Amino acid sequence: MSMAGSVRLVCSMALVATLVSAAAAQETERAATFAPARLQDGKTPDFRGIWQASSTAYVNIEGHAGEKGVPASASIVVDPADGKIPYRAEALARRDKNYNERATADPSVKCYQAGVPRATYLPTPLQILQSPGNFAIVYQENHAFRVFHPDTRPHFDNTDWWMGDTRYRWDGDTLIADVVALTDQLWFDQAGNYHSTGVHVVERYRMTGPDTLEYEARIEDPAVYTRPWTLRTVLRRVAERGARIIEDECLEDENGVRHHISPSNPKNLLETDYSRWKQELRKN
Amino acid sequence: MSVAQASRRCVLVAASVCALISGRLAAQPTPTESTPAQASPAASTAEIPRLPDGRPDLQGLWIKSAGGFQGLFIGSLDGTNFAAGGRAGGAGARGGPPPPPRYHYTPEAELEKQDRTKRGYEDPEARCHLPGVPRALDQPGGLYPVQIIQDERYVALLHEAMHDVRIIPTDNGKHPRNYWAWDGDSRGRWEGDTFVVDVSNFNGRTWLDMAGNFVDQNEHVLERFTLVDPNTILYEATVTDSTVFVESVEMRFTLKRVPAEQQILEYSCLEGERSLQHYTEEDGGKKPRAR
Image (cartoon, rainbow over all chains, first blue to last red):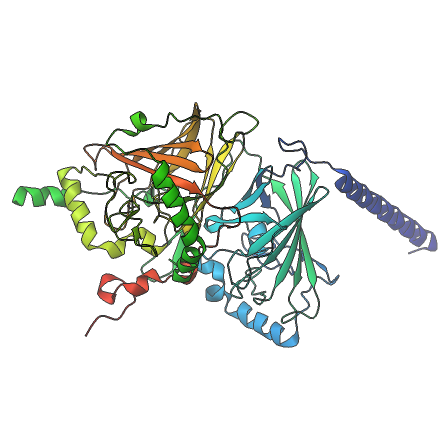
């Protein structure tokens, strides 16, 4: 390549870089200034609606290659910058063991509630319920829910729950939630990433546009990680007409394996047959 | 169910529930055999909390205070039998809460009911399935509260028991087609100050209680939630099912406001299932059969 060509290439790369960073800056600015609608009290930001993650980070929050039916995803771990969870050496060994046994060991295979933050970026929607002074999230998956309590009262702690104990406050238009009391049987994803009962999660929910909700979770657990780390993703509004959280139940088959069943599958309608009792009555 | 959870709940609420019940017994009018419609409260509604749109504000944490729990003894420290209607030691006598519901089965359904009574271990709730309606609210008195969140478009019931959720739209919409669920499909509307819910589209799998009372796929429920005073919701349910009952089943009990210093706890069932450990192996449980 000639010198002139190289210069042109460098120049155009610099131009692209400038444009990209300008767009990013614009996006950041828009996000920072987006003012959500308000509840009836005219004050509380209105996050109500049905939301769903669009990435496939539920497979592996550190990122994964594409596979049949599941597109690839980049890491949603934004701190550390390398996108890797800063495990302690022995903890990393346990994660790898989890990964190898994931087909049966993943708690979601058993239809257990997903925990925090995993419930947020599942491939199923969630619904935020809100009124002045009340905030709750209903997750479609295994009909789990969390009632957010104001942080004016201390945590209900020293227990190990599947959805944790949540205290929240508003910081401007950002909802900040403090979550403890999570069981060590929970995973972050299908890849075996995990935490202990000592985990402390700080979530930040912020609308960056009328139909986008940015979600961030800072994870602190000194027994498992060398330093706190943060994941971030975006939920999008489910805007289909008549969208709803549908009932999600699991049925156990003859091998003791649980399967999600759909309320829209006619096979799950169990029609009771009384004919044997009619015969019984005729006999008597 | 989680025994630890249940006992923790008992410890947390026992004192307040006893207080509520004694207060309630004093305040309640004498119950009658009248239909729920006739018995609907005519109490002054001026002082109940309301939302900006004027609708009664049902929000808060509520717990069934007593009654209507399948005739089993659910006792408390002072000898109150919550199941029998909250009277010390026995059934709801004069001055007590309403009697348990009556079930009038078709002959075939009566045999089915008797059969299910013997197979209590098949109760889907013992296997952590959603209880259905009205069983979602007809939980043991004083044990599992329900958190209500409400806005101008829906009334949401978040039940501690079985972490059962019903987000009920208030626009009196139509039931969907091709949808069959444990909790059915709920469509709500306001009739004056009463929130009325029409529930249909059941999947035919739920029982009404642990004693084998049941419904099939033709179940239809009309529920009425009325805030009779700031701390009391009167809950009424009319259950019809043309293939099971010859007469509709009427249920009626109250939900009391849980003091603000308490919160809803977690109920994990599949995650720590223990009910089946109380059933022996031959009944499909986990307890070794007696030798």
